[in-house]
Length: 224
Ligand code: FES
Ligand code: FES
Image (cartoon, rainbow, N blue to C red; front, side, top):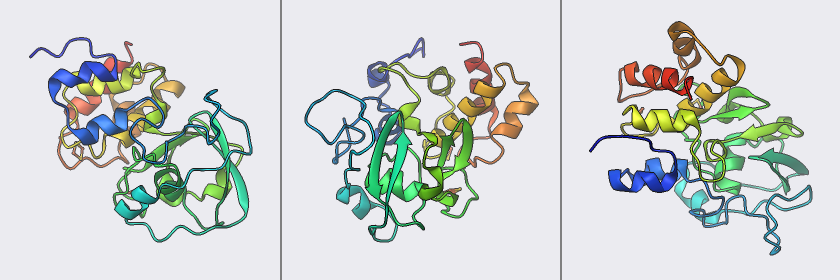
């Protein structure tokens, strides 16, 4: 089947794409998240909410995660994918624990949990960072974007679309982090050279591919 013009999540259905790959690309907040993802805690359904909304605690994703038990700490506010919420987060809780366990946003993966693999990469104020090495308390007032927040209104980000269309996804574990690293690069440098692309993704380990298609895909994304 020819891979032509995949632009939205529903377009992926004919390709029987794995549930894991599908889940990180899932765009509608709360669709697959037992805790409601980034849906506001209020019943108003008015979309993004301001400060004061509590993080929903996602106990099911906690059970499936290798993190230690989540405890409460002082209230801090975080803005994730355009939504600002408050939660009692301990000062030593990592951003990866907060977004995976409290928010149920499992696009960012827990690979090494020690800053080596890049699977947990998210954007913080436009920079690709390791969520497993970042403390949530230090991200107050900053804009955090996860793989779930890359797309807009069900339409894939050009980086996501290019990764799918070029066959750069195999098991998909590294893909959310790669997509974030690529988006951070392209926001800063819309026409990177191949070498610049290679440098940008050099901290994102892929166990499956030889990186050729990944680099090609990011190059494709520069052309929209
Ligand atoms: S899980 Fe963060 S770098 Fe590997
Ligand atoms: S596609 Fe499997 S780790 Fe990259």
